[in-house]
Length: 358
Image (tube, rainbow, N blue to C red):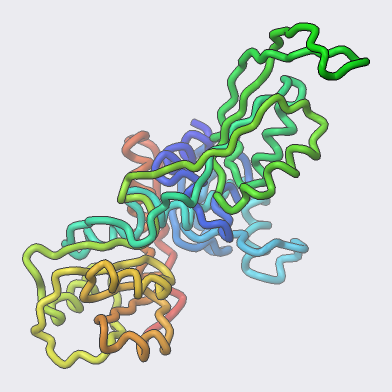
C-alpha cells in the first residue's frame, strides 16, 4: 500500500480542484510513492501531531487545515509550522491536507454538520458551478511534460491530470508562399486534460506560448456542475421544526461546544425549520442563507459587526472554529475505510481545541 492509494481515496471525495483559489490543498510534505504503514487523521498538523503519528507507526497524516499555508522562507524550527515540517521530514512522514476541497465536496463539512443536527440537506449556499474550467492541450510527445508542469503551476493536481496518445493532422505550406498548401501529414501527439480554477483562465494563453513545446491545439471550457450538493455552505431543513432552545442544545451536544454565541433570543420556543450552515469561518454567507429562506445560520468566527447588522433578520449561532470542523476526521475515516476496510487508520487522540472556555 502506498501513500498515494490512501490519498486517492480522499481525493475521490474531495477533488483538489474543488479548493478555493487562495488555498493550499494537497501534498504538503513527503511523497505519494512512499510505502504507507498507517494513517493519522487530524484538523491541524502540529509538532505534537507529528510525534503522535511517529509513535503509532503512521507514515501518513491527513489533515483538514494545510500545514503549509503561507510560503516558508526557512526551516529553522523557530515556529510550530517549521518544527512540524522538520519533524515530518525527519521521520519520513507524508502530510496531505484537504481543506476547502473537502468544504465543497459532496458529503463534505457543512453537509455533515447538517446531518449531525438531524437536519435534511437540500442544497449548498455557494455552488461550485462556474468556478472551475477544463483545459485540454494537444502537444508533441516531447513537450508533454512541460505542459503538465505548467498545468500544475496553474492549479491542476498533477496526479489527476489525464494524458492520452492521439493523432493530429498537420498541414504543410511552401516556404516561398505561406498560402500555397502542399499537403498534410498525420503525426503522433499527446492530449493532456486537467481541471483548473476558473480564475487562471486569462493566464493560460501566455503561459502556453512561453513553452518550447509545439502546441497543436488547446481548449478552455467551463466545467458546469448541475449537482446542487457541490459547493460551500449548506441549506438544510428540520422535519418537523424544532425550537430555538432545542437547536442550541443540539448544537452543544453534536459539536461538543460548551457555549454558543447567538443574537438576542426573545422567544426560546420559537420554531426553526430552515437552517443555513458553514463549517469554519463562514460569516460571508449570512446574507446568502437569509436569501435562501434560512431562519437561523450556524458557523464560526462570525464578526461582532455581523451580529449587529443581522440581529433583526436571522438568528446567528456561532461555535468555535475547531468544533465546527472536528467532524472532518470522521469524514476522512469513512472515505478511507470504505475503500480499505482493514487498514490502520487512527483519529488523533492528542488533538484538542487550542481555545479554552473558562
